[in-house]
Length: 342
Image (cartoon, rainbow, N blue to C red; front, side, top):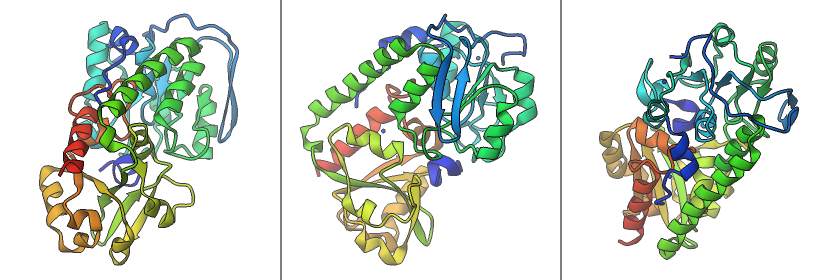
């Protein structure tokens, strides 16, 4: 289970025209190229939680770590040569479907997969050295300062702006575009995706003002995703609102998730719940579990379910390539509409 995002640490927005033109799926060797378009405006200085990073010239060999920056780069026409594997989602040695399809469509070699323990907590320095990147993009990750310092001896590293695993989906794209010298293209991509979200909000006026809480059952407690979590904040762009109780009960001190004991479940008041699970069986068990009936929305049957690793990943949070993946955010939007229409 991917603790960093799925457990501890979603709309008919189609893949944007830029993403489609960049769509591509690919194991690049150390001599390959990231096929980067010529960015301008270098050197680029990016401020982040650990200080600032200077990128002297347009990167040609990009490595990514964490979540979403791979897709952001690809949607901008840059194909990283090394990316973090997503073991919880697709298993070791496999690629996220929207990433693989994108590399294939562009005729690019698939990137090297960097070994990840499933939580992003262990960085494979030797593998990154072997990939010989000239920039490492990790704007949505769990890098520690020590890991950042070590990676910075290999290549310039772009870390998250504030806290681990809390960078908003749009900020992830914006930072990636800046690092690649493609800010205008990044703005166009963001405008396209935001336009799709606005269209979805307009198509679902019943979403306006409805409150929600996003959770995962931890058996004895719930993981509750805070308002800082991108998988939560993206839903607010559809007119939905994070339930005040989510913030009132938050003990995370700014993190993306916190634990809520079963004894406090009655305090988690919301119009509906978004429940994440590993499988359909776990999703069904969530609805039937007696202890969870203490949540008012669960007792009322107001639960939008998201289950199976690929589907959960596609909306946790959505990325530049997964916004239009039909099994992901579009399906979640339909699920929410059904729940609110009951």
